[in-house]
Image 1 (cartoon, rainbow, N blue to C red):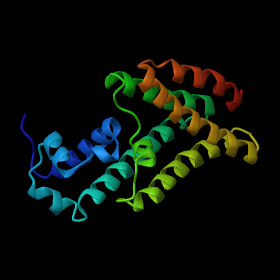
Image 2: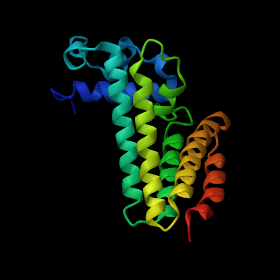
Image 3: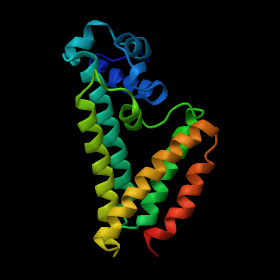
Length: 189
C-alpha cells in the first residue's frame, strides 16, 4: 500500500511526535522529520511555513489533544478511578510498544531547552492545565471538594508523568503500577 497524496502534513506531525517522544525537542530537525516520515522536502514549508518551530508546536498540540481525549474517554462513566486507570494503562501500553524508548512529547518539550522556541512554554502550560482541569472536574463531580480535587489532579498528573520517566529509566512499568496503587484510593470510593 503506497502513500496517498495529501497525507504529508499528518505524516510529518506523527514523525515529529515520535521523535519528540524518543529524542526530545532538540532531536527534532526538519531533516530528521523528513527522513522519518518520508515526506517530500517541499511539503515542509507548504504545510509548516513557520518551519521547525511550527512543526514542533503543531505536533505537541496534537499529542496534547490526543492524550486529553484519552482522559475524556476514560472519564465517560464519571468514575475518577477508572479515568486514572485508563490514563495509566495508555502509558503502560505506549512504553511497552516502544520498548521504553518513548515518553511523553509534552514533557519532552517542557524539559528541553526552549530558547529557540519561546511559544513552547505557553503551549505546555495550556496542555497540562487542560489535563489537570479534566481530572479536577471529574473529581469534583465525584463529590470531592474543589480545593482537594485541585490538589489531587496536580498529584495525579505529576505522579503519572514522573512515573513515565522512571519507567523509561528502569525499563519497567512498575513505577506506573506503584503510582496507580497509591493514588487510586484517594480518587474516591
